[in-house]
Length: 298
Ligand SMILES: O=P(O)(O)OC[C@H]1O[C@@H](O)[C@H](O)[C@@H](O)[C@@H]1O
Image 1: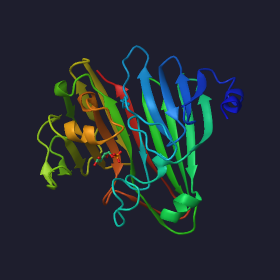
Image 2: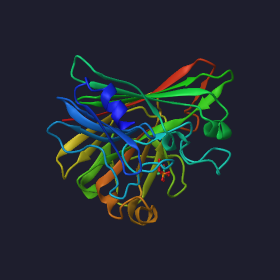
Image 3: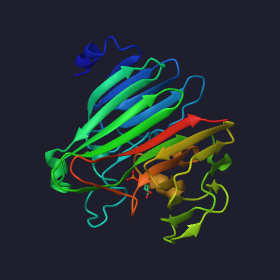
Image 4: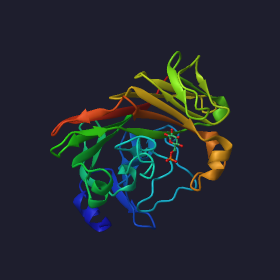
């Protein structure tokens, strides 16, 4: 498998491949603007680092790369639903796409110096058993000064299907105590920690306890002000009116087996989400896109 990929993309500059001990395949991208690492399992961006910058994407020190298991860190693709399934909680949290093998559809160096990596997932017997729809899910990952991830869902079946999900991005920060997230002032959110709904955000988001908030009716750009690293990370999106901010804090970090105990000190998730009423009903042959863009700002 690895050898075949290496041969196929031998002439594509800056592309190489590796495998985890458990056999998962990684695509490594290195161009004049940035480097990135993508895992084929889950259609999952694991690393993104613009040239001259520190890493932007957080990955757990205790990550487990294993077939059928979600990767803790990077950018999990939650699909076709976000969080617990709305009617059947025995179904996998955040859908099934992050636990499946995807295929490499296309890799290309663009004239402007960016690199495009496209991965595809289609229905399988196991997906049909829990979600009875034929589909094509494509993630187009553009690696440049900015990282763009475009998740396109297409209904390839003959009945309508409802699509939710998320680009569940884990960001690195120097010290959570010196971190503020702006862009959500006056936005209404549901608080999954206290179970209180319809709270109004006042000012920036500071994280000094477990935070699990679903911000509603918002498509604004969020900025992570990382005081320790003296940098701002800009997170913009389209195709989503829901933003989730998540940090598990002390106890939950300890509970999650693949999350290093002190990991909560150096990460925050800003997620571009489709959930609740903010989902798509796709008729046969219809598509929708969820896009998140990430860059180091001023
Ligand atoms: O452990 P998981 O399934 O990857 O989920 C991590 C977190 O993902 C967030 O999106 C949810 O809002 C949290 O409630 C959840 O705990």
